Image (cartoon, rainbow, N blue to C red; front, top):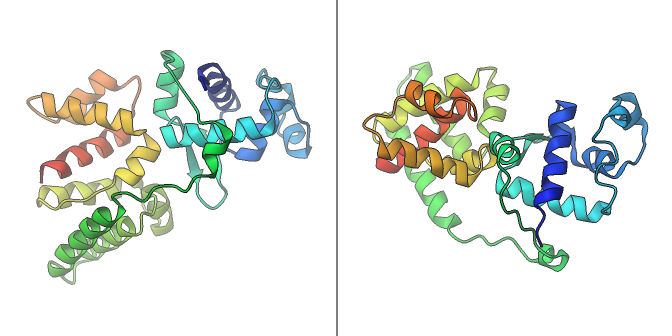
Length: 242
């Protein structure tokens, strides 16, 4: 079913409240359901409160799940399961397109695991290659930890937070690894953060230009993506070439 307008409502709500919220609070906000969190946070005073009251909780849960899969909304904190809008979501708000969600019965189907074996094999191969290069240096140990995190499909921002480092430091290490012609598949993370279509758009941009300068890419896409997001896409592009 076409859900473009209701997706716009959900995305506008996330933009208005300006902070990550659990899915149940976002749903309560949309349907206009008051509770302690809604009142204490002042969400009941926002324009978003009750903006989606024409639909039931189940509908909004399904739509938000579909929006996460499409890359318009992301789970910002895995443990707390809080949600926030992605750059792809902001782009959708500027220029809305078609957005179709499945009927309720479709959500009972199992998620297909097609292609996972190949991804795991690739990650393990990368890990083995890195371990062969292991030295006593702290940087090499950090690179191994990053590869192991990718092997387990840990969100890179969560990994950085757990290690007490900035995400840019993780990106520095990944850029060095792909420079060494090591294939590293981080699309499980970039597809969640940016959305697969946006990643493909940036990868295509890099492939069609004479260089893959971050500065040039920011001039082209700086109003939609930040430097970290563009660096992530460039890592995907460079890794695909290795």
